[in-house]
Amino acid sequence: MAESVQPRWLCALVILLAAVSLLGCTARGTAHGNVYNLATGEKTPFSYTFNGSGHGNMAATFANGEVGTGEYSIAVGGTVGWGSVFGSVYGPEGSATGSATATSVSQSGRREGEAILIGDKGSILTCEFTVGMTGHGFGACRSKKGELYKVLF
Image (tube, rainbow, N blue to C red; front, side, top):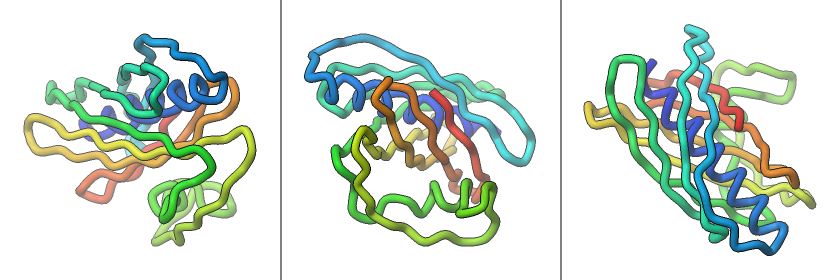
């Protein structure tokens, strides 16, 4: 459950950075988001920094007290190989099970990103997300144990 904190923070950070890059601003600050464990419904808040570069740091504290830190990166116009984690959670017909296929598709007004959050007790959360023109976004994460998460920011 603690691993769910990492993806949310990362997604939120990526979305904010994407919005800043779309507007051509050099805004700086901190933002927040949440990661939801799809098996337990547990919600974990996270925070991230942004400086307009499309890359930043994030942090979260899991329910078990484990502290996670990591980073995120956003690519304008799509990322090669992006989508396998995202597809595992969302799938073509909503929530999915099993494996997923990655695709690289560019959509105007959207930016894709990836994030990783590593806990001080060994948890690892890998996330993929998309950021809209407003700076808000959503994504998906998978823990090293295979648990799936939704991220909103």
